[in-house]
Length: 316
Image (spheres, rainbow, N blue to C red):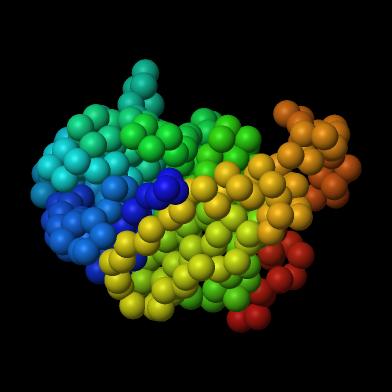
């Protein structure tokens, strides 16, 4: 008898920025998933699928505290169905010493409705997310009843393989990445999920929005890759809600015996232990001697492009 986990995925497409709208949508989509033949034990949603502000507030205030009103409503859903619940990300508002910080955060709930943990996006998509503070903590959580460990990423986090690798080293067997990937990135990014899966001998789930959001169109095509790096399933470009059954023993076999009983990647990593001369001081790497700092704002990006003669046609 293997170790199986049913994961329900909400590739949503009719998202708004308001918490009110998205909470209603999440309740509806969760109900639909739970009525399926294979009821999910864990349900996940997309980046910013929870929302960014309360539309009915007297004044526009971005974000909500965690824990707060939003997570209280999400907790009720998890408890009602007795599921692990990772319904996407939201703007988390933190006020300390008169200073306000916003994080792009994924709250995670247990079957009893308790808030297990919060993943704050470690690599915000600058300069688009110039108002977002980066997170500092790797987050995993356990499906205690089955002894399965989940690792959490948020969208742009997957572009930095160190994040997936550290989650795998912490024991994560399934890596889950909610996303809001716009049209135009598909061809460049479609190989990332299977690559992260293969190199960490883990399942990798990339769950993307499908449809319009704030003036962009997100292409959907969520991808599930197995521990051998093969794509197990890729969705289309329309909103959909589906459940897949994951055989976690495939991860454990790959790590113990080798991928396809050959490549002993995680076992050999310990043996080779490649030196990491720039760990914790990456700015000292020679590549940065001639590379400018990243663009944290659109203004700094425009200044650099103007100075170097890029995208200057029709501009004075």
